Image (cartoon, rainbow, N blue to C red; front, side, top):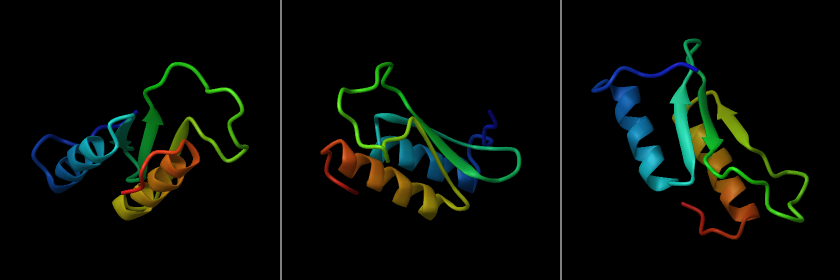
Length: 79
């Protein structure tokens, strides 16, 4: 799993995403893709087929959109 260097623009965006979506751990791969994995250790019962443990995007905006969609599936307010 890649990590952005602390203090760079991507690192700041990752920190913001982490604050906005506290149930997720975001990171950026060495290839430049944006990822996030759920911090929950258990899959809830009766989750929709679209529910994912890990999401990704080409950009920080794409990752935020994927996270917002996942939060809607679990009934959390979208950001």
